Length: 333
Image (cartoon, rainbow, N blue to C red; front, side, top):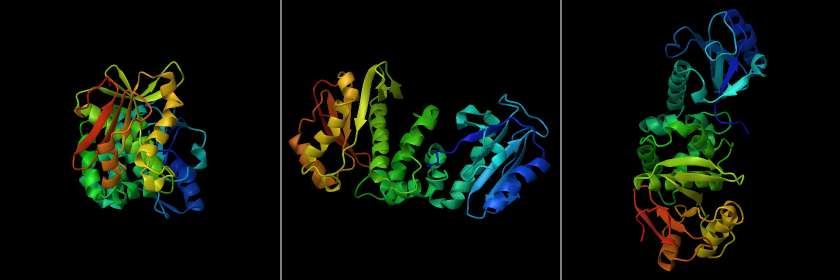
């Protein structure tokens, strides 16, 4: 499985003739390709070309004529959702935030325009498009991630895709994870097929982050601890771990409460055994109304305290309850 979009940095000197011979010719021979000028003005001091493949793939290349070197401003940069030409096979890979800003900005303008040409419905959600660009235009995951967000309403049951997209557009526009995009966007994954379980679990982290953010906490993701474990968030000083149980119809557990306990057990056997003080948030946003009402009204214990059991809907409604003495206040009963 290919990873989210990243840049390749070539320290070799490049000229337009070499771009034709080493990049275009290689791609054209293997999958069919055309080289065109960029849609947007290249970064100052760089030459740039677009490569459009017969199978719908696209790639970009920016270089300084005749100049090479390992320093960021001396590299030539390649990014795309296609096969890598052999001349770039052993080059280093970098995320969007690790290349010169002018290169990053130009490439993102090109790629966002490409994304919105392929999926015009995403243009109404500019921050979501930008945030998830590394997966929405990835080699393997572009179809599955778009399908999950639109046709599966990003994991919300009985909801329209447009409502889910508007929900996450509003949240991500807060800028909460702009500096952590390389970590958080990648959680959606780049599998060729819709992995509803894993993708929904990823969106559960965004749901809980929204609750923490709305409650006024500073949220930091992916907390590496001395125990060797990583927990999902730090909310100010409190550690927070997230789990998202499947609804009963999707798992062997016979009741909603059992589904929650089974999911929580995977955490208490791992991270929470080493860090019992951490707060567990059980995101039941995958549960349809009837299943959730049984949990909400029965308020079952979940196998760990402190914990919050919550359910979000894309119209902004939040329901839930807490057990134990949570170190963060989410405004639940």
